[in-house]
Length: 156
Image (cartoon, rainbow, N blue to C red; front, side):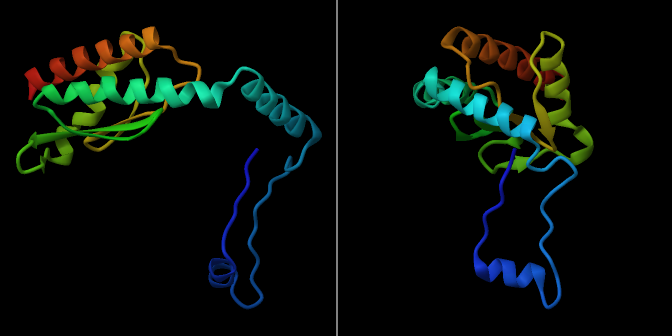
């Protein structure tokens, strides 16, 4: 399920004279997909997941900011459960590693061995975990990240 909201000004630019904004596929608005989406929303509301994310998300960000004690970590940015870790060659100047060093990919690979899946985009590792994480899970993720980053840093 998704929706796209845009201003009239943007719509006018992308649709142009005689143009159309196409947003839909074969199963758009399919009753089964709509029922699944509504059930998911009801579950999130019933279990208080958005409210819980306010506290666990803040804890997640604090734990990952703790990784700033590792020289390879130049910045931890994001909010709640959408966090990016940027890896730098020199933290003081924010100098990046060359693309061919594949630092993000190396960290992601090292994370995957113990079971943490993260997305590498150049020198940035992106984490967007499940919203039902608790503090114990967050602690485990931080430990896996710390070990992976330390391992990769030794090899650079």
